[in-house]
Length: 100
Image 1 (tube, rainbow, N blue to C red):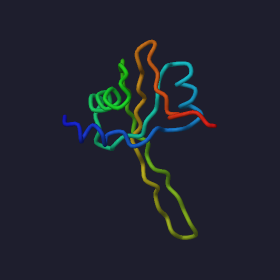
Image 2: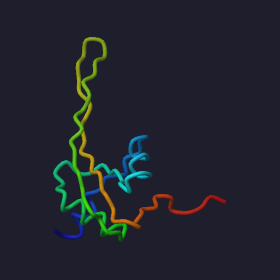
Image 3: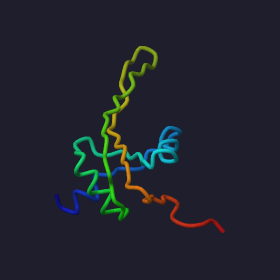
């Protein structure tokens, strides 16, 4: 796995109420990842980008919702999520800085 691939595996942090709960109680963080990403790639990408120790990774495919507008039927795009569990005492700070 080369560094260019690892830098593109993580698409964005997934922000939701459930993601905040698992971050608070389970020391887990949720990311949207590329559709063809593997557990090992996600693990190495998080360790490379945030300089933390990853204990485990769980992946899931979220299917897109079926939608209708008048007589047109369509489907939203699905995506892949990764639940990343960090080692004890490790954390990721998405804040970047303090507000003045």
